[in-house]
Each structure stands twice: as structure tokens, then as C-alpha cells.
Image 1: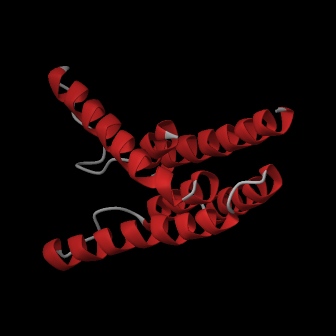
Image 2 (image 1 turned 135 degrees about the horizontal axis):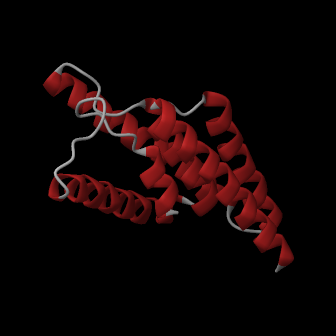
Length: 142
């Protein structure tokens, strides 16, 4: 059980770091995303969970948001989300496996919508136009 606590603490620390950086800069460094994926795969192996499910989760997490952004770009002529978000979801797949990804996306989306609604109700606008750092919501959803 101490191993699970250590892995959970490491995951939380990495996610908090990604959330703070994304909130401040609207970017998640590639090195941090790579560390999240690598640490997730190591923790999955170390704790005896399915490495196959984690690898599928990495591929599915990245591919889903990459394709969503590609479709948005084709329709609107600009990116709808950054690939740092796709890499962060790949990291979630490494830690949680492919089966956890729909829940992460659902919870993160609900948190993002609630955040924007709360700003509107309070009569405030988001800084930077319509751009919103989604990494903090992904990090909170895990």
C-alpha cells in the first residue's frame, strides 16, 4: 500500500506542476508531459497494473485530442486546443489506462464549463480573449 501512496503523490505533484504552468503560460512543456507519461508507465509496471492498458491509454489519449483539434482546425481555420493538452491526456492514459480516459475528459469538460459559467455569472471576462488553459481542468479531473 505505501507504493500506491507514493505513486499517487508523485502523480499529484506532476499534475499540479503542469496545471500551474499551463494556467500561467497557456503551455505545458514537452519535457513535463514526457515525464508524466514515463512516470505513469513506470508506476503502472511497478504496481502490477496492466502495462498494455496503459500503453493503449497513452495512444488513445493523444490521438483523441489530436484528431479533435484537427477537425476543429479544418472547420474553423485555427487550433481549438494545444497539443500539450493531448500529451497531458496521454499521460492520464499512462497512469489510469484507456478505460479511465472518458471519465477524465467528462470531468475536465464539466469543470471547464462550470468555471466559464461562474465567470459569466460574476460578470467577468476571461483574460486573453476566448482562450482557456485546459490543463488545470485535466489535472483536477484525475
